[in-house]
Length: 118
Image 1 (cartoon, rainbow, N blue to C red):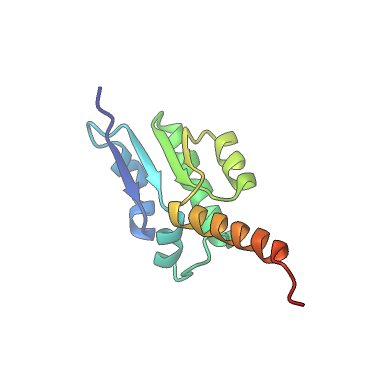
Image 2 (image 1 turned 90 degrees about the horizontal axis):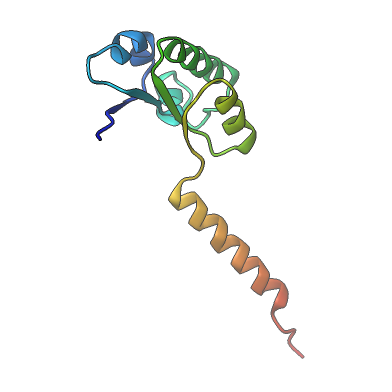
């Protein structure tokens, strides 16, 4: 079977989220916090209360319609909060961030394990 999801990533789209979700054939809405924050004038600050509150309101509105809601939440507490609000699919990592974290951890292990010079 096919599932059609649309992304809502601007403040204008958020204002129309019910109309977007109501389009025949759309099964769910994925909210993009980073792009939404940028659209709200908060580039790189998706964790600001204004942004989080707007997302939470959008989640409630789409869930009330009986449609699936998804989100990117790389912070575990935020991911669980969204799940508790009814979000059905959560992206919990970003490939580049995960690779960068792994590289930093690997580098740190070898820096502390490097032999000392005599």
